[in-house]
Image (cartoon, rainbow, N blue to C red):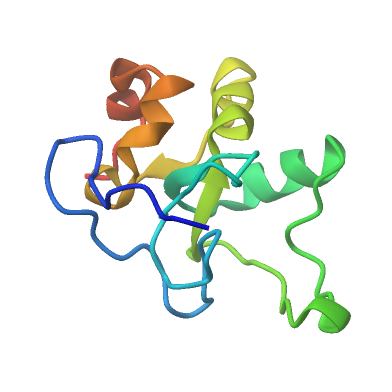
Length: 123
C-alpha cells in the first residue's frame, strides 16, 4: 500500500490526529490514506457523546471496547480519523463532531466540501 501525500485540507502538512488512542487507517496517529482505504478514514474529529451515541445507533459502535481487535473503545474528547462518508452523514443528520482541519487529509474533500468541514472546525 502506497500512502497518498500527507497534505491537509488547508494545503499544508498533515498534522497528527491522535496517538492515544492510536488512530488512522495505517494506525500511525495521522489520517493518512491510500487507494486501499475504501472508507476514506480522512476526517480528524474530536469525539462527542452525541456523535458516539448516534454512531452506535446507525450500526458503527465506536464506544464499546473490542479487546480482540486491541480497541479500547472511544470516549468524548478522543481524537479519531473518521470515514469521510460517515462524517458527511452525521453532518446531514445534525450530530457531526468537531473537525481538526490541519489534521484532516485533503482526500476528504472528494467526499466532504471544505465549507462543511469548516462549519464544524474546532475553535
